[in-house]
Length: 220
Image (tube, rainbow, N blue to C red; front, side, top):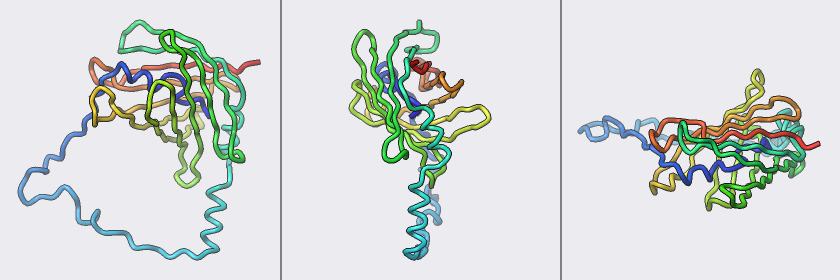
């Protein structure tokens, strides 16, 4: 799909120290208070579903729609021009690569395979992206040769700006047990030009910064 995450999104974290710890509840240590409401302890009553309804819902869930058709228009071979910043104000690092998008599983998901280089070394990545009919959201997973984890993101499409915004978390490799929040904005400039921007924490300040920008140009 949208080549999202394509190119270095996880690799950039190799050089970033994240500052994304959650604040503890202010009532946590106060006597007589509870951090969990009574309602959250109550299980929601199960609503029986008959087989006919279940089959109908499964058919609806598994049937590609308009968002899948849109992803299908992104199929093909693309050239990439990538720019990466180690921190806010740093000298940008530029590189080129290529990406191949193809719909799989009867048009329900888009597979993206990326190849290029990072700091003079070969780099490969792959994503699976789909539109979840139940959640009404795009969902995406990404793996690459510079990591051993899987990044999962999800978000919505904005028709007015022809862009989607995805968010997710990834392990903070500099602080075991912690996570970094990542945000991706994917824009369709026209049928032959797309732009991906990846945002994450600045290793110097912890504030969000644009870490990666990738321009996709369809190969002729």
